[in-house]
Length: 156
Image 1: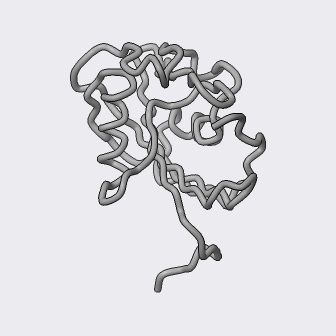
Image 2: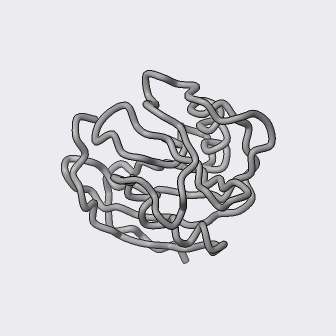
Image 3: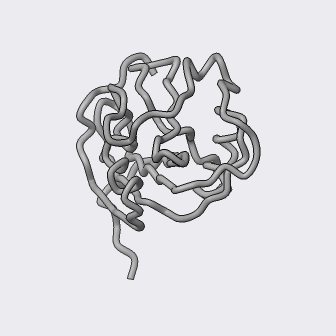
């Protein structure tokens, strides 16, 4: 039996890629908008697209690499707050199949880099902050939520 989320409005979905190198450093982008947080390569799931398809598309658009989805690390649910709709953030452990990460979308991405997963930069996006430990330790299928958004978004 399906369970209702308790919300009748729009639901937005996003998908992000946890990619680690041989030193266990995590690939992060720095947003060139809003709160200018460090985040996973990823973005909105478009109409008629699965979260897995979205994360592959977004990794190519943002950091110029083709990724393969290995598994679902987790899902985080955020209820409507700050005039934002219900949001489901999917995070996948991914492997780079082709390419070297670079700032493929300079208008959207301020920087791309590999960071120590035990001491990540700040501020981190909500999904990255909540699931980085799970991703680094190989956990799968973590479900969190509904989680309050700790910081209202700034400017978009």
